[in-house]
Length: 122
Image (cartoon, rainbow, N blue to C red; front, side):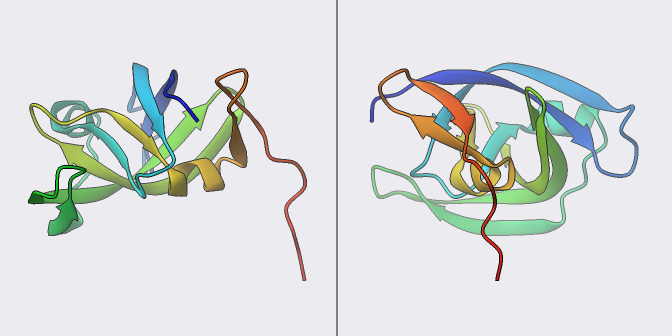
């Protein structure tokens, strides 16, 4: 697929006036979660809801991080999702769960996010 970056905006779910723009996050369909720096999430008042959630890094190392709830915006699309409180050395990632909630998919040839089309319904 190749790697590419995009920008996003993170908002506090209870007070949307508290928001931060992250200009460069790696689009990573191999990561379930979206990872944002702890300082950014704390600055806009996102609370740590799940503590010490275990993750396995690509190199096989297990780490623990906290997770909170935020509104994630990419362009005109937005969703509420869990976000990981990233620490120094962690990549900033836009993960698969957020992409699904945003109804966006990866166009691998153009290396950009595109609308995934109508949502399936029963």
